[in-house]
Every structure is written in structure tokens, then in C-alpha cells.
Image (cartoon, rainbow, N blue to C red; front, side, top):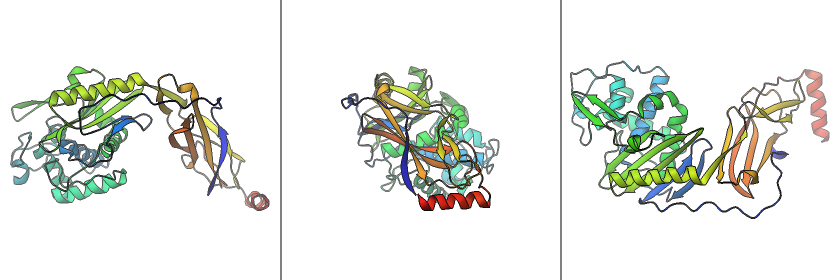
Length: 374
């Protein structure tokens, strides 16, 4: 269907092109800073270059475990068998043992808080039967999430020449985890330490101690990957997420991630264009029981703009045309294109806020004739 311009949300005088704020200098091979609320990347360096993700891989392992819990294919108190392979996993461990009961909940804390490679393998084998089969699940999910520069070979992030990701892809994964499983995220990712098998291990994300607004997410390190950190901070209604790959030390990755988060909150404003459930426009519908349909957004539409630039925003509602009944509530009926002085900020799907059934035979025939004459 062709799209036509239906409405202009904000009509403002032409102004000189607003310059994006100068991003800070960051010690790392690649990085991304993004606003989770609006889905905008605020600044980035080498966002699509492929790097070894190390233990940042474990975000996908947790994502699939959360999905299995949601689908009731797994229970938090279910006991999981520990295989020889899981028990002998190299690198960071939570120290699970064969023949010693361990629950899904304990394994999740082992993965997220302690970064246990052994816990990852145990969960992978429980869900998919083998770690190789689980890696195939990880790659299918990565494709679904739009991660175009990612390939997983294992559940933990242990080095493999064919195991890679990018800063942008890891942002997509981290933001999807927060969006799709907010309760699980809140339950696990802010935990500062965890004790299992008589061994207490701290969360390696130092920002959980340094910044009260940081509530996750994950660290990673190998010799090849360097020091990596994905950090999420919520201040008021806004949530920013930083992805830093290949920094030089534990201290540096925390400092540089903090620098990025602080800069993002200070350099950008969040502007709410529409409240969730509020009609953006009543758009024309054909062959329906009524001539118009209320269109808008399920949740608040928020965009990030350089500090003080909110009044220079412009948004155009582009509706599918002709829009034909029946249309179900929640169905996509167009896009809202948002620009700042001609520079695109994003395009957001507009949905039907109500259902419109098909008209009777006479109504449909009359609209068919009008469409033919139009």
C-alpha cells in the first residue's frame, strides 16, 4: 500500500541544523550509548565492527532461560542435573557439582551475578539437550532480534574464532532483555553478590556500588576481548544503556561506562511526544462500520534530543492508504516519522487504538465505488 502524509504534529519555523553534542573520548575498541526508552543510539564508535563478546554472551543465555520460564517450559525451583562437561567448565565458575542438587534460580544467579561458565552449560543442556543445540537456539534468537553481526558458538562466551558480536548487536540484546522480561531483569541484574557452595562471589559490575541509578547489566573479559561492560542506568523516567568493548582494565571499563552514562543524561533531553493510549489522529478507514479510526501508541512515545532542542522537533503521521476494514485494535495502521530540523530521529509504528469491523454489504459496495472514482 502507498503511504500518504496525514498530519503534522509540530509545525515550527525553519531553523539552522542543530548539531549533535560532541561525544566524550572513551577508552575502548568500540562502544554504543543508547536511550532504551526511545530506541535511539545517541553516540557510538565502531558500533558494527565484530569483536569477541566474552561473558557478555551470557545475556543471550539468560534471555533464553527467561523465555523458557515465561513459556512454563522451566520452573525456578526445578532441579537441574550437572554434567561432567558443566562441572569441568574452564574460566569463571559458580562451583556446581555432579550429584549435588542445583535449581534453575541458583543457576541463573550463578550466570548473572557470578558469571559462571559451568552454570551456563548446565542451563543450556537442560533447555536444549546439548550446548551445541543451545547455541543454535541462540543464533536463531539473535537473527530474530536483528543482530546482524553476531554468531554464538557456546553459551558462556569462552573464546572461539567463530564466536563474535558487535556493540550495536549487544545493545539490541540488552535492551530486548530489559523490555521483554522487566521483572526478571529487576530480580537478578542488580544483585551485588551471591553465595553458592560456601563460596561468596561479588558481581563484577563495579557501577552497582558506585552509582545508585545503575541496576545492571554484565561484564566480560578475555585476553582477546579486553575488559567489557554493558551498563544500564535509570534516572527518573529515562533509561540509558552503554556498551563498552575492549577497554584496558576493570577500573577503566567502569569509569568509561560511567562517563558515557553521565554524558548522555546531561547532553540530551527526553521529550514525550504522545501519551500511551492517546489518539494521535482519527484517520480515514474504508469499508468499515465507521468512517474513521483512532490511531496512536500503546505506550508513551519518547524521543531524545540535544539539550534544549525539544521545541524544534517535527513529526509527520504517515498512514497506510487506503486503510480497509476490518481493523483489529493493536494492528499497525501507519508510522510517525520524527525529525529535528530535517535530520531523522526515528520512525515509529502507529497502531489502531480501537477495532473497526467491516461494514454491511451496501456500505462496502458504496466505499468500493468511491475508491474506484477517487
